[in-house]
Image (cartoon, rainbow, N blue to C red):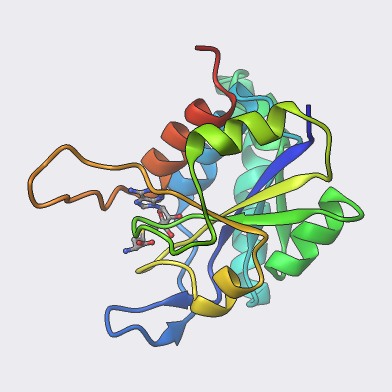
Length: 185
Ligand code: SAM
């Protein structure tokens, strides 16, 4: 079984026009994705943000739930938010997960030939190999340069709708993808 982590990237992400921007951290993302990461046995959940003030906000949220009154009130949140690491960039998260870590990116769009199906991704994780950092975006999705440096771009969670609408919140996408890749069938 390969070691797996995930990172929620706030830069480089795209805006509505496809320009590269930096998005703001959303409190609920930290909670929901930490809980999914714990549920599916990830080594860690990294939040990456280039702006120090935003990282400080994330640290305050983590502190409140791991060592503060939030954890006292709801102890179940302590192990989940304890998985949360706050870093400057995707690269920092990749280095933290360890030597040789591969990036597997995600999006609602079907990738090209480099795409990795969720079934093949699940099988690959069952085998031996370097650690895998699953990369999730914010805004209108990960910047193109992130996909370009990835070892794999996972196929999206697809919709049965005729119009194919499949733009999930990142929280929902993380939970579904982790279940497909690592969940107990
Ligand atoms: N149009 C953007 C895209 O295709 O990535 C939607 C961005 S969505 C608000 C934020 C993140 O959620 C995406 O970067 C991706 O990580 C994840 N996501 C959203 N819908 C998804 C789907 N159907 N399949 C896989 N990941 C999805």
